[in-house]
Image (cartoon, rainbow, N blue to C red; front, side, top):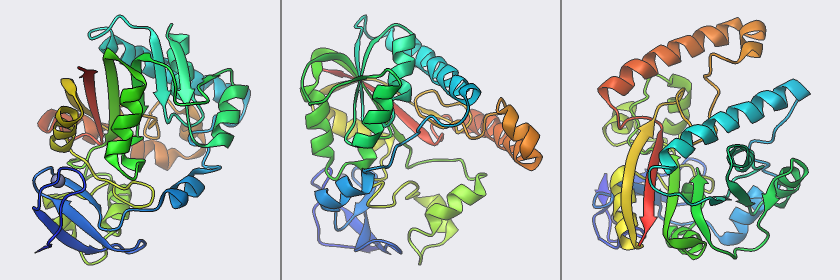
Length: 307
Ligand SMILES: [Zn+2]
């Protein structure tokens, strides 16, 4: 790690080191020790990002009627669990799922009683969501009691723009939910997944990755690897009170889409028994590891109140 003469795009301090060049992206991976975050020395252009996401159709509900029904049930259950957290902080009912892809969460929130709306830049995802009965916010206008964002912030080019967008849509006293990949993950038993991120920076070793994880940075998709430290700093900077801050392990998450390790996936059990055994192993390991490192889950959740 070499220190570089640069100012952090997130916190403005000059405590930047470089971890070397990305294997499949221009420029270096910068790390700021003040805000504990990685980002690329050259941020992507807006045009690159917009074209990258058209037709992305994030989490498109697919397959047979039964598969779609399972998907709906899954997201309704997730929304129910999220709602039990939200109810502690707000009685508000008007909710915006900001950047919610094909609207799985939006629909889940509607099922549990929220006046739930989707805002999304991928127009083909918006069409799919509308066909599924999701209410669409076509312009960034209006005020909501809750703005829910799941795995959106790390896709932004500038974090300032994320906070300006969501703040403009949130009532004063309203609740902002930010779920994002946790930079400081402890889920090292997911070998294939972890190895993919090791290769993002080709000259670095597994030891480097474990000491200071750049887990989840792969521009122009994920432009940032952010931690609880970064999020707390950002919350204060953009006028929010921190209500809660916790992590979820890969098989236990409600605040994000992941369900690939679920033991309830009966299709997997029938068609790919080895995969079911792997899911059993992941489930056992995540339960054990979450006891030891409660803040080490792959999904970081930050619940904030707009001042
Ligand atoms: Zn910084």
